[in-house]
Length: 361
Image (cartoon, rainbow, N blue to C red; front, side, top):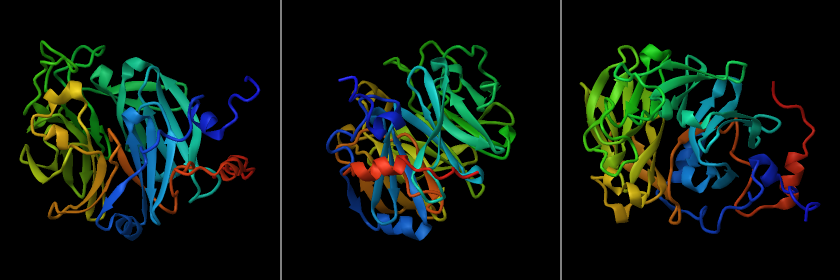
C-alpha cells in the first residue's frame, strides 16, 4: 500500500493524496450561443475557480477543458508581465499558489510555488495593484500586500470605520485594482461594524452593500446587496450585485444594473467588449443573503454579455456545478489552461510532468 501511494501527478501537483478526476458530472457542461467562438475571437483562455468543489477549470478555444484540484480556490490574479497566475486557496492555513506555463508559453499552467499563510487572513480576491500582488484579508477587514519574500504579508489598507483588525465585520471581499491603492476600490457587504457579523442568520445585508474609495477610505457607493468582484475597465467601475443576480456599473454613487442573470453573481472579467460573469447556486444556509434571487432556479455557469448593452450572447453552464468564485482570462499565447483533462490520458500526463526543459525566465 505504501509503495503505491503518491504515484499520480494529480496528487503531487495538488499536494492532495485523494486528488484525481473530479466526481463524475462536475465538468459536464452545456453551451448556449457562440461561447467557444468568443474565446477564439478574443484569443483568451478563461480560468474559473469553483471554490466549494475544490476545483480550478480552464476553458480554451477549440472546446478545450482542463482542470486542477485545489482546496477551496477563491481569488485569481493574472500577472501578464511575468507570465504567471496567482490563486488563493482559503482553507486553514491559507495557501498562495503561483502557476506558470510548464516549459514554454502556451503550455499548461502548473504550480511552481505554494506559500502557506495564516488562516486568520481568510484571503478572498487577489489583484495586482501597481504591479504588486494584493489580497482581501476578509478576516482582518483589510487589504494586504503579498510577496514571496521574507516579509510574507503586510496590512496596507482598511476602511476608516474599522479599528479591530482581528475579526471579519464587513465581508470586505473584492478589489477593483487601480495603479495604486488610492486609485483602487473595494467592495464590502456593510459599511461599518455592527451587532452581528457575517455568517449570522440574522445579519442584515439587503441594500447595505458598499464600495469603498481607496483614496478616502470612505464609502463612495451604496445600495448593493452582497457586492462582489469589483473591477475597473475603461474608466468604469464594474461590480456584481450578488444578492440580486446582477452585474453592472457605478454611476454617481449608485449601482446601475446592466444585466440580471440566473444565479448568485460572482466572478467578473472584462475583455474587449465582452464581460464574462459567473453565477452560482445559493448555499441553503445562506439563502437569506439572496433576497432578489430565484433560489431554486439558480445555476452554476459563465455568461458572456456585451458591455455596451448588457445583452447575454453566450453561456456555459455546469448542470451539476455549484459555486463559482473567480473568473479571469489569460492570452492563449501564455497558456491553454490546466494540465488535467476530463478524460485523463495517464501516459500524456506522466510525460508532461517529466519534462526536462528549463522553465521560462
